[in-house]
Structure formats: C-alpha cells, structure tokens
Length: 467
Image 1 (tube, rainbow, N blue to C red):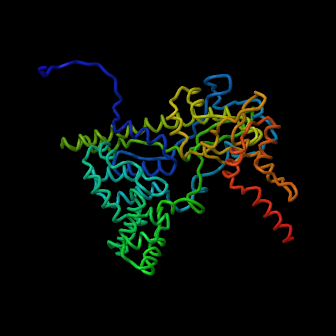
Image 2: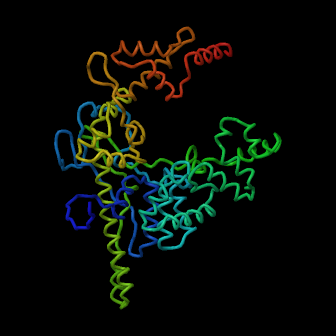
C-alpha cells in the first residue's frame, strides 16, 4: 500500500490555558496572605501599579428574590431569632493588624526567598511558580515539567533555578521535591552529606521498617556507626514548611463577615481589609509616556498598563465570585447560624455550584483558604460542606458535622458505670433516626480525637481513684 501526504482541514474546540487564565485561577484560591504577597510582587514588577485597601462589598441576594437593593442577605425564618449570640456587626471596628501577628505565611516567605535567589525575567517567573506550588510541608508539589510548559522554558532551566533556590532558601529543605531531597539539602548545608549517609537516605524504606541489619550491610557501618547516622537524620526537619503553621502562626483574618440584619435574616459582606484595590498611576504614565521617544520603553509601559487593567478586573471578579458563593452557603446553612451544629444541613460543592451556575471546581477554589466570621465563630468556608447521613425513617438527611456533635455529646455525658461502645452509640443514633454503621461511628470518634471505650473507662477510673 502506497503512502502519501495530504492536507486536511478539521474543526475542533480546545481550551488554551493562557498565562492570564492560569493567574485568574490562582487568584481565586489565594487566601488573604497569599493574595497580599502576590500583589506586592506585582507592584514591584509593574511601576504603574498602586495597591490600596478596598471598600465593603455586600450581598445583594435575598431569600426568594434576586437583586435586592438593600445590600442585605435577608434570610428570614430561624435565622432571625433575636436570642442568638451577637457577633461582628457592620459597625465593628477592626483591622487586619488587630488579628495578625508578625509571622509570615509559608507562601509569602517562599515568594520572598525565591525572589532573593533569582534575577528578573524568566528566572523570577520560574521562581515564583515554584513558590506558588509549595504544599504545606514546604515541598514543590507541581511537576517540574508542568512548570516548564507553563513558563515556556526548558526543564533543565527550571531545575537550575530550583537548585539555586534550594541552596539559598531558609529554612534549609524548603523547595525540596520529596523527603529524600529535603534531608539531603539540610545535610549538605551542614557539610555532613557523604556516600554513607546518602545510602541511608536513599533507602528510607529500610529505616521505616527498622531493618537495621540491611542498613548495616548496605553502608558497611557497625551498630555504633549506624546509630550515629540515624541520630543525625532524626535531628533534621522532614517538613520545613510546618514552621509556618500551628500555634503562634498567622492569625485568621476572615474573608467574609456574616452579621444579623436588624430587619431579620443575615447580612453577608466581604471583609474590606481583605479587598485590595489596584489603581493605575495615570499621572506617571502620562509623564513618562509623553516624554519618551524610545519604542521599547513605550512598549513596556503599554504592557504594564494592560497587565494592571487585567489585574483590576480579575480582582473585581474574584470578589464577586467569593461573595456569590458565601451568600449561597449562608442561605443553605441558615439553621447552623440559628441553632449551631445541630442545625447544620448536608451540603456539597456540587449543590452550591449548580445553585449559582458555576463549575464545581470554581466553588472548590473559592472556598480554599477562605474564612467566614459568623455570630457563632469564625470558620473555614470548607467547614460548611458536609456529607449527608441517611435518616432511618426516610426523612431529611443529617449532616456529618451534626452527627459528630451528637456523638461527642453522648460521650461527654458518660459515667464510669455507663461507658458507651461504638455499637451502643450506633444503636442510640438509630433510635434517634440516624442510620450509621459501627465502623462509621468509630471513624467519626477518631476524627474527634476521642479514644476507644476501653481507654475512656480507664481514664474515668483513674480520675475516680485520684479524687
């Protein structure tokens, strides 16, 4: 059969992930600290940018209506009870500085470390992408190949930039791609990395299994020599990113504030302290633009102006999207705001996405690393999404959080002579109309950090003897 070459026309649809589209997606999932760090980096790069705190944006959606003009989320019913604890109100006087401490977030710190270790241009762009990809442990979570494609550079170039950042970043081990690389970076900084200790790090699976005989054969070290190596490894930090979380870390700054409406229901507002505004310095643009005859300089200013305009529109869209999602959450979780966890309803990302006409992945990004201040406390927005637990009588399903709360109530009420097993709890829940298997009860109990019935009985007995 003869082979031949020919031209064919074919029509197809495809999504081109432009740099601006990628950045818009990232803006949605940035928390307050990450967004602030990103905008500061943009302001350094773009001389036309000026970043200022924004103004309050209120929900204009009310229950049963669209486009209410009073700026309130007028969710009536149980949400209008005047006996609920009072929280933040629209006149509350607070700023971000009242909540935050001096410790920076992991992302903000990593971005600064990446900028310090790289030069402007492609190096800086790759460094910022690497910082953006770090997970909570401080590891690079995006494949190097993906970053290379995103930035339009060779994989080898990304690896060179990464190696430079790894050599300079603090704490040592930050920007590692896995545990082995993280430990190796720290040992090299201490000038303690050699072939013997490298062999142990390359075989961490043997260390995890405590197969010391195999490690001795592999390294040629005796028991005391191997013990010295293991002592050094134990002194290293396997997750350097965790230095930026936990107690004493960055304080929570709510992105959304929910307050009780004087007319009944709830008012949903974006926290103005987390709404930066992007301003274009037109005076500087006109002065420099008219006084310059350099084509390259004018082209640069044109790019800066276009970039600043896009960023302003992207931030405005981000704010509207967050407010839209938050308003729908408040509408669906009105029972929680009125009566606490027992009033929480099952809710998924998909149900919210379908209700507001967005994709599920967009809702997922919007609710990541965002917090909502309510009269019942400040919660991560993901907290309000909980799976449904079937009712035994075919009635309304129960939320997983409300079931966990009920389990905790039962265990808190235990006495030494009446400690409930997981089977006992499942049986009580079934009588209350909640169909839950014993294994699920055990899973929820462990999620609440509650020990088994045997351990609880021992603790109660110890308290009785101590008293």
